[in-house]
Image (tube, rainbow, N blue to C red; front, top):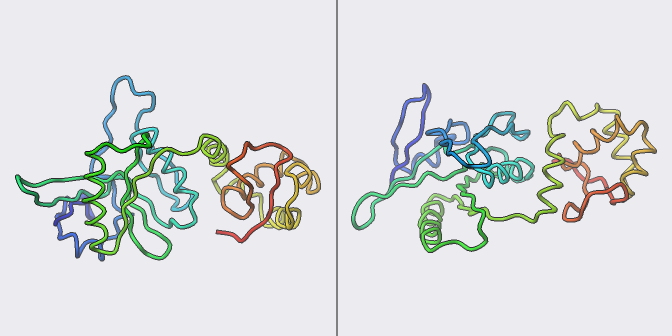
Length: 235
């Protein structure tokens, strides 16, 4: 079992998977190759600025962009990279290869490889591949995730909050403390905002705090001015 990746100086390197999984910081590796631009696709490949890492993450499809966004907000995730490695293994009939779309580093140090799909039902080929890659990951103490469809309301809410993920929307220490105090107990969004001050200043900081996990709300329900918001521990 081998793994290909771009090492320092962007030189291609091939190593044993068992050793590289423990030694290589794959979340810092660039994509092995760019995603192709396909005529007729509604979303062209692009880059996502990650608030988790402060780095750009490449994506090649709408499904991948969605999950990069969701993982960027996931408190379990400390590192994120697109297509940083290619796995190669032998099967009857020859060598097989797969380049997972994403590599994650969890806060506890565990590595995760992931692929994204728009379908809730996997094809036989996808199930077979997921089984093999899952075993390859488990052999070195990693995980493999197949990331599928997401609830539309939750997706829209997180997409809105993602627009405020940059630290420039933090609002400063004093405003952050005021938000924690105003929502120490669950309170309607608009009532808490008006108690603090000018909504034009407070709302961006509130949305940033919701993205960062310092404030919480039920994002499975449509966002509105009366939605309950409450304070919780920071990420």
